[in-house]
Length: 115
Length: 119
Image (spheres, rainbow over the protein chains, first blue to last red):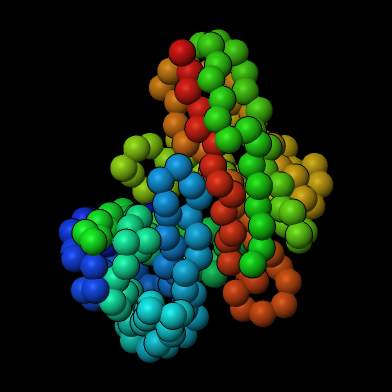
């Protein structure tokens, strides 16, 4: 089946630093998504990318859909303590039928921000 | 954004009993909902796709007779863990697709999750 390799697995940074994480796949995805999950909560959608090469920002977050459609990265600028959490990438192939909307998730990046 | 709720948020049950978890889309109609399971420090694992008015589609390795899914309305899907065992203890998360206007409305919006502990 499809797999997403997300890296790094964890990051320990100082408040104010920039963060970068990425996901790669052996197969093509038509949509890339980035979610954040706080402890004991469900994931929250941060950014959705629909077109190869697309670069999208959401406040201090910027994500890009790789031109090969097999990768994506997420950058967080000027990190703050509330950025702490687990970040997941997810890919979708836009298949129809019973596979519609199914996502493949990366393993997650655990982000710790020291004040 | 779209709001999805789950009930209960936490449940403790005895081994051999059944537990029902509800997933509701609060401000939109969801023809498709998904059920995931997440173990500590791991990613989300898709269990099944729930389509309103039809049978759920289960992922390989997920026992459909053990994890019963009912999507009886456009705003409610339920997951029943039957004859629960301690190894079923996990964080269960649902999501729903809001097929409203705009590209992002086709994305999955997740509920807050249900922590199941089987003793």
